[in-house]
Structures are given as C-alpha cells and as structure tokens.
Image (cartoon, rainbow, N blue to C red; front, side, top):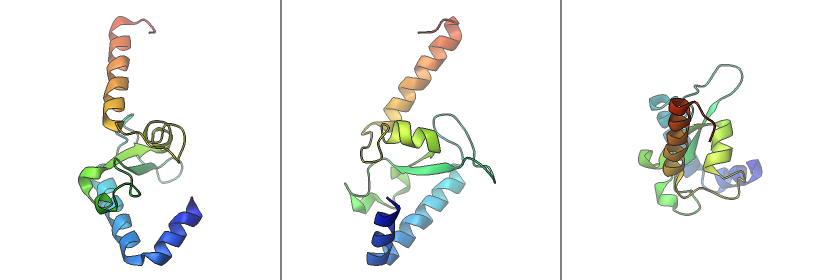
Length: 113
C-alpha cells in the first residue's frame, strides 16, 4: 500500500499534496474518532482520516471535506474497510450510528445482547 502511495505521489505530486493538506485540515477540525472519541497522542495511537467515497472510485472527491471522516486506527480498519484495506464500507456513518445505538441499549438495560 505504501508503494502505491509513493508511485501515486510521483505521478501526481500536486494532487497528493492537496489530499494531504485536506486531511491535515480535517484532522485539526475533527481531532476525535467518530466511533470512540479517541484523540491522537504524541506517542502511541493516532487518528486517521478515512475517505467515505474512496479516491479510486471518485478522484474528484479526494479533497472534499464532506467526504472525510476521522477514525482511530482500529476503527478505520474494522469499520471503514471492513477488516480488509482492499475493501471499503459504503455506509460508514450508518454503521457507526447502528453500533452506537446497540451500545446505548446495552448500557440502559445492563444486559449483553
């Protein structure tokens, strides 16, 4: 995956820089994981920026702030990519809302579903 990004950066240096700047801007405005609320730490876990519509599907949305979502590393892999970075979740926000709803119901009832 890292090699693909490097090749892409060499082929499209300005676009890669724009995407990186858009992700940095989004991360500053939304520093917490949308699922668990974790923030980046100086050492240790970091939050990542996930594209709701992947760049390979629609390159025109690569820098759109409305297409970006902050997730911690674990949730980026599990929820954003369904456990496989070659795949992606077409309804990330719906998945997050559904999981949070289950957590709320469990917390209220005190029973494990």
